[in-house]
Image 1 (cartoon, rainbow, N blue to C red):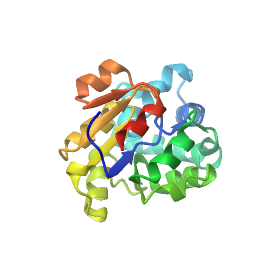
Image 2: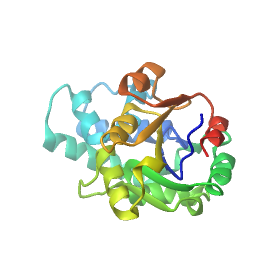
Image 3: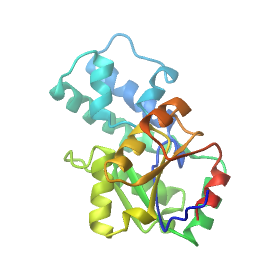
Image 4: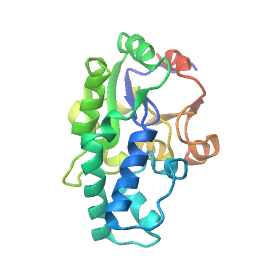
Amino acid sequence: MSEKFINLLFDLDGTIIDPKEGITKSIQYALKKLGCEKIPSSDELTWCIGPPLIQSFPKLFGREDKELAQRCVGYYREYFSETGIYQCFLNDGIKEILEKLSCRSKLFLATSKPTPFAKQILERFEIINLFKGVYGSEFDGRFMKKADVIGHLIEVEKINISESLMIGDREHDIIGAKAHNMKSCGVLWGYGSEPELSSAGADFLIRDSKSLLNFC
């Protein structure tokens, strides 16, 4: 890859960390609190890793109900804030890759996860100092869509879009970048598939984290 990027925007879930246990158990907890009789297994809930929860819960119910979805998000956060936030781990080799990249480029986090949760996770793994800024959703409902997160980041940081790259494992990362005419890279070690990322229009696809070093 010949292009070099000054600003690297990273997704969190699936891209930097594997959050499967914490996210799926938080969803199961929320569904149990709601009184659902059939609770999907963790493997059946991996499709929920990445998209905003407010969009995922209606699909689990089988109907659109904004009030019900909001209640579920509240239940989800009860478990996640106390337990689920710790049920994750760094993807293999990613810390060392981020350390090297931070010496060459400006790193930013762009996640649909609430900003306080994202910061807590980065602090736990001692990598928050590698990022120039951490941007996520807010508990009041702002910046839930990845496009909104990226837009907020661009506005605050005043970054040059042509010198920036969004890196993530789901279609929402790619679509969010395209909304701002930013190039994107889909990573294949997370929870998105090659067909998903390709159909969303990813400019680049990579299979292992070491290949990220070629981006700068």
